[in-house]
Length: 170
Image (cartoon, rainbow, N blue to C red):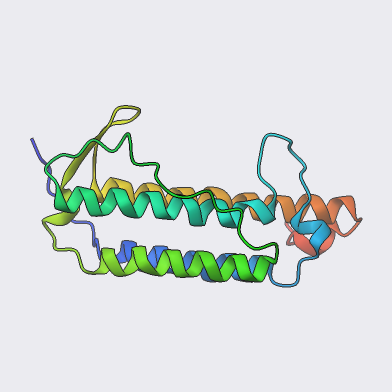
């Protein structure tokens, strides 16, 4: 049984549009040392996060297009994006991500109400829909935005500047 959601789907592209602006704000003025700081050997540095999300963006856009053009596509074989190490300059990486995200946002803004409930299969996660994939993209953004904030806080702590990054709390 399909459930009708009163969710305003037009807000998803608006939300996704914000990510490049937020990330650009977070990384403006960071040093190379901060961009390359790796407090956890299992996770990406700030410099690695931005090309990672640009690469992931390409894969997700392929998924979104297939969901709209095919009947219940299997998305398991769609990790076709070229690995993007990106330019070494963080500002250039941000511009690259912004271009990739703009293509996704343009595609999503052109969707009909019926498109948002179109289905696909991912064996790792099970059945999915266009709206679920778009929300997953926003969640992925939030994960990495939080990671950038955390890495900046840890770097500030390392440099003895921790009070500058954290607001006073009662």
